Image (cartoon, rainbow, N blue to C red):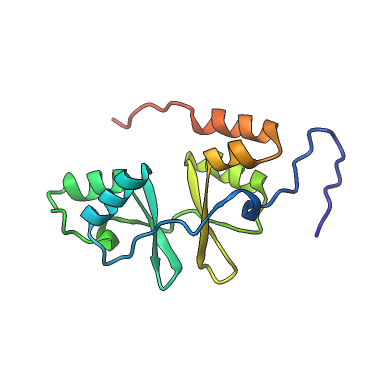
Length: 156
């Protein structure tokens, strides 16, 4: 394991995502209906779910994907998750540092990331809340929350 060259008091911690992530997260499959995905989101009070096939991460589906790609397009509740999901979703490895996940969340303006193992199998989810409550580095948390929570103007 590499050591950081810097020994400042505000140096990034070596905490890994496996230490702060939520294990065994709920997920949906490509063939599930968007109604099933929406109900699961409502039951869990989340706005996004990983989409997996045979345990492997295929993408993410968000409440916005459902409203924009399905409802706004006139598709019914029996539409398939695979038709609405975002492919090429951002993800991180359980071996990545908490700081790396924070950087990705900030740069991509997202609040949660799926966490995969070496075979790209879903092993967890990490959210801003996980990092805020479990991470050792308060400076990283504060920076992340303020950057991800930046208001944006609507596209017009």
